[in-house]
Amino acid sequence: MISRNLFKKRQLPFRVHIDESNAAHDFSIQLLDLIPKLPNKDIVIVCIGTDRSTGDSLGPLIGSKLRERKLNFFHIYGTLEDPIHAVNLEEKLSEINAKHPDSFVIGIDACLGRSTSVGFISIADGPVKPGAAVNKNLPPVGDIHITGIVNVGGFMEYMVLQNTRLHFVIKMANKIADSILLTDLKLNKERQRSMLKSIKPNLFSS
Picture (spheres, rainbow, N blue to C red):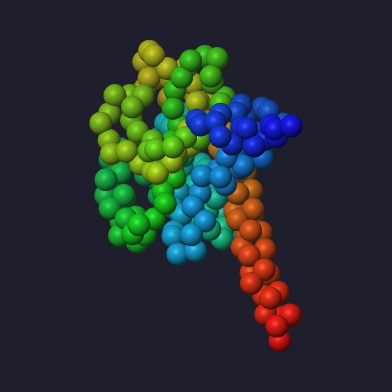
């Protein structure tokens, strides 16, 4: 019998609604599967958005929540205090590339979608394209990307983002941040198991 979780890991983009009971757990499984397990490769999370627009504050909210925790494997950029947005995106990306050359980058951004898709978070290969919802031409971000559909698109996008409920965006940000925290814990456990495996043969040979 084929494992349901194993089958889900092979489907990209993967998406799940934030109200599903196992959303953070299932999302972390997908993220863990996509992250390279290389000891000398930095993993950078770039949270895009601004707190000047409620709907567009998803990225900075996630970044701030993650910065509050001591993560072992992720470097976090883009917070409420120091956001990464359309005006400073190119400059911030240059700084990040200088600090973390040849890193693995995860781009995070809010997006708009169909009414039936609002509340879904997704993870997919390739970069996120910031500003696409409001027809801005900005540099793509990430080797993989995470997005959250915060509201309905297709008409007066700026106004829609401005009038998105903050409670809903915070709820989504918490779910995505929780999934990243779970991924960090799982990566730490994998590292500990790997260290134990390397130690055991030495114990028996001594």
